[in-house]
Each structure stands twice: as C-alpha cells, then as structure tokens.
Length: 527
Image (cartoon, rainbow, N blue to C red; front, side, top):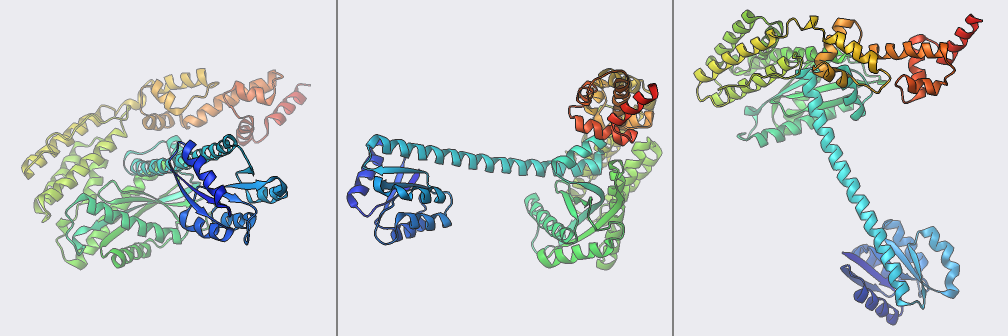
C-alpha cells in the first residue's frame, strides 16, 4: 500500500497523473490532491504520504519552499518534482532538499511510470531494511535476555570456565572488573491481591527487577538478572574505570532501600541479600552461596519482626549443606541434612504444593551442581517419583533415592584427577597450536565437558589452558625469530594467530619486549 499526494495548481495535470498511476501501477495506492504549497504542507501532516508529486511553479508557497517545510517534519517521504524546462534553475535547491527525482513537463507516460516505479522500488527497499533491522533488534534483545538468564544461572549453579565467562561478557558488551552476587526473595503472601498463577508471579518479579535495576544504576553499577528461578538471582557488576567501590558499598542500606522501594511501588514485601565480591568466575558459586546464607539470616530477622513461623521459610542453608556434602561425596553429611530437610517439610505451615515446588527446585539446583563436577558435564540422575508425588511420604522417599543416586554419581569421578586425559590434551595442543584451536575443541578431544576440562587442566598443569597454548605458540615464535627470516606477519600466521598486531601484544606482555627487539637482540649476541 502506497499513499501518494499530487500537488499541482492545474487540475488537468493532476487528473492526467492520477489516470497514469491508477491504470499502470500494479501496487495498491491511495491518492490525495492539493492545489498549492500551503495545502500540500497541511495534507502531508494529516495524510502522511509515501510519495509527493510536487509542482515547483505554483502561486503562493512554491514547490521548493513547500518541500523544504515538509522535509523538516518528515525526512522519509519521497518527493518528485514536476517542472518545466525553463524552471531547471531550481535543480540545485531541489538536490539540497533531497528530492527523489524529477518529471519534466510535458513528459511521456512511459517516463512517468519509470520514475514512479523507481521511487516505489526505493520505498520497498527502505521498508525491507527497516523491518530487517527491527527484526534483528528483536532477535538480539531476545538472545541477550536468554544469554543473561543463562549467564547468571551458570554463575550461580553450574559454574563457568574463564573462556566462556569472557565470551558472555563480550556478547553482552561488558568491560568486567568485579562483581557481587545478589538474591531477592518475594513474599507473595503480602501482596494485597491473592496470587494464584505463575504469570502473576512473573509480572511481580519483572517489576521488582526494574526497581532493583534502577536503584543500582543510579549509583553507577551494572546489573544482570535471572528471573527463571523462584527467587530473583542477579549480579551487581563494577565495570573497569568505574569509580564506585564494591568493597565499601553499604549492602545493608542497599537491601533496605530495595525493600522500601518495592513496598512503596508495588506494595509487596521483598528481602534482598548479597554475596562476596569476586573477580575470578571460579568464585561466583561461592558468592551466590554466601548470598543464600545471608538470605536465610535476612528471612529469620524478618520472621522475628512479622511473627510467622520460621518453618515457613525454605531453609537455604540446608540447600548449601546438601551441595557441599554431595561435592565432597560425604554420604553422612548428605543424609544428616536430608533429615533436617524432612523436619522442615513436616513442620512447615506452607501448603503442600508450595513445599513440593521448593523441593523440585532444590533437585534442579543439586543436579546442576553435580553435573558441573562431571567429566561430560551431564548429570544422569532423574527426579524419579518427586514430580508426580501426591503425598509427603512419597515425595520425601523419592528425594532420599534421588540424593543417594547423586552420591553414587559423584563417587565415580573422585579419582579423575589422575586421569591420562590431561596428558592427551597437552599432546593435542602441542600438535595443533598452529591451528585456531579452542578450549572446547580440546575438551571434546578428551571427552570432557568444557568447564570440567578447564578446572582439571589448571589443577593438573598449574596454569590455564590459554596460558599453556600461548606458551606453545611463543616458544615456536622465538625459534622462528632466531632461525628464520620470516616477517612478523608470517610468523604470526605460522603459530596460529590471524592478527599480527595481537601476536605482537601477546609477545610483549609475556616477554616484556617486542618480537622485533627480541630478534635484534639475538642477532647482536650471535655476532
């Protein structure tokens, strides 16, 4: 659909142009007319045309002045000037305004159609570009939201390799310096209206996230959120160059500010806790665990003020104890914690479905914690009867079986540190460092998950995968600098770097001198 405005003081000219358009243009069009420049300006605002055919020589406001005014309010409209030969002196001004084309009167039908079709093609291309750009932005926003959820989930539950951590930060365009975990727990029972659907809870979580984000942005911090879990998990990030100091941040006051603002804005009670500061992604789980522990303390303090039963609060400390017991492979600790969890379940005044949901969420967290320790990154233990359990007895019995199965799986990897996998990885790196190999490829070669491989490699070799790969490449670079006449660019390609400038920066960072200086020094010593 195209809207066309024809502006000419001569009705005969307007009618002739309308006949040509209606007869020969296949696209659906809607046509309006104006008899002078002033009317053209008014109609362009109300009609919003895609194309304006505008006669230059008209009484009153001429076509040039009308076009200039129209262009000020609508930069996208296509303007085609109608002009006579003796009016061609207006051409320079028309070009400055940004007209799409000229039709010189009198003109043949075929030429008029050629101009119209060319303008329509340009409009179609512009619309397609706009739609594609809009679609790309929507897809990018969706992808960013998904990656943000996944990023926080990995940091809080599964753990993440340094290389993956950097990849997430690169995609999210964050110049990371340090961070602190945060968790907000919403008390839906305090909301004035009864909440009985997951959608209602999602809306309240979304509003709470918006409030937290605004508060932290105002003090110069960046935030990332995961809203897929029952509580809001988030990361408070200090970017490089930021003057804010996470060490001196008054988190108690910040927690109160969040609670007060959420209460004031959406009339809902929320408690927020923060974990320890970390720079190394390997410390992220510890930070979120600290936040969980602190959340238990905040919840206990809140319960003392509000007087509900302490047993109504899910015991996050038990979740942490179960994680730690499983990762240590301590059957005694796991079963003792399981008994405490059973006591909470049986004594809590919460509805059965709410308690069951908490247990199901607990199994998800524990499964991922165990997967994080597995060579292949997979936990093969399922929920068993927990999801379908209709009674406390069946549910708790299913949880007991689930925990014992997790213990069996963790026991199977206790001696992996002595595996020959890392020796195989070192040989793979030394044989292939001239290629663009990645941590993921090396992990796949060893049949290990990326994260487990990264952790095991550093533990076995004392350095990271990237450092080991870099050492192999620089060792070969030094050999070539000493024994060949290859250029820096050629050496860079030869050892696996596609960017010679990057090779130079890496070499200088490790050796404290540039590769050129290194070669010169070696040549002087040999003389």
